[in-house]
Image (cartoon, rainbow, N blue to C red):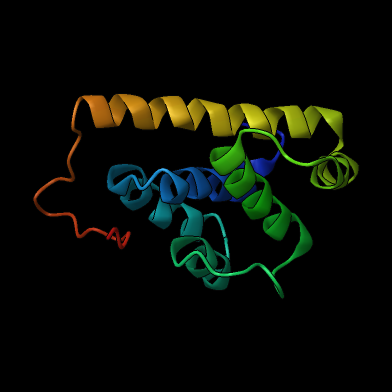
Length: 128
């Protein structure tokens, strides 16, 4: 999980994956890590509650928007892609998209094998 994005933004991308793919196991495993790495509670809440990104820091808002778009449509529009490329640069953007892909695979495995929280864990993601 040592990406050029750094641990805070990497954890954000993982939370976006967990939320967009509705995976309780992944979310509950990573929300505490995100807080430990300094991710702001407002950013976590925006992801968890599927709120808009207005008012969030630019990189965080862009990671959320890009992740939501990739999971919903598989491809960003030209404007979003150009903005992400400008903000992150080619290398970090490739790493970010690959991270989203890696976690889609991890969610698929955890769903296929029906991974559950430990009995002592409280679910942190509201899934309806």
